[in-house]
Length: 257
Ligand code: ZN
Ligand code: FE
Image (cartoon, rainbow, N blue to C red; front, side, top):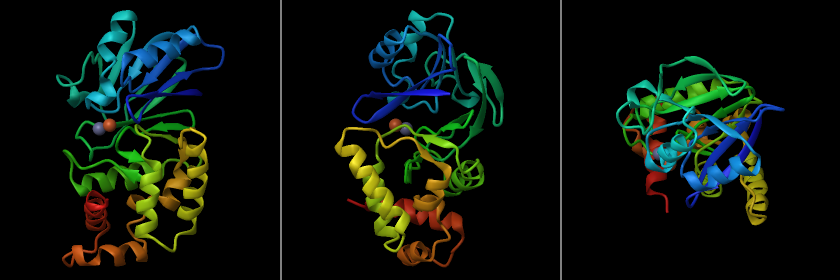
């Protein structure tokens, strides 16, 4: 799977996916039409599908306009987002499989940031929207801490270690700063922060990460870490379950800077 990273708005990423030798493109999260259209035109590609990770405007802002230009294009999203996700044609359920653009994708329902959030797994890649960020996770706008725990730890963390992780925003440097604050003894966090600082200094994206790297560095996938437990102990009110820890880490992140 060839993945072109298309910066949109201030810090969003859209992704243009093509199979080798194919002129058909699948776009994950058409944040806005213009940069996505430009990327398609540069490579002479026909848009056949948009995969929307959730209904927030910074992820679907280009849907209507792109579908007008490419009337054959289908728009995939989680089924319950019908009515609030522009141009949706194919509502998905958890674990639904579908073929488009020369790929087979699997939808993973990952509620937490929103109730209709979905990840797309295809080839060795996963597209996680605002649920899993590199070294972080999205705010709990609609779901609970327990739902976010399951989405990150029972679903995404169980994908193969080498799975490449593409997320919705370039928040990595700030997320790693918070990760280091939560786990000062985590050498993998320090090493990754250095790598990401070098990438960002050259203007390059921090994506993709991998599932293995997320398990090693992402505080929301490390709710059993003794250092993290200690950091949030006062906020746990006796409930030391990993779900409660995730909730406390999320609250700490909301307050951080
Ligand atoms: Zn969002
Ligand atoms: Fe977003």
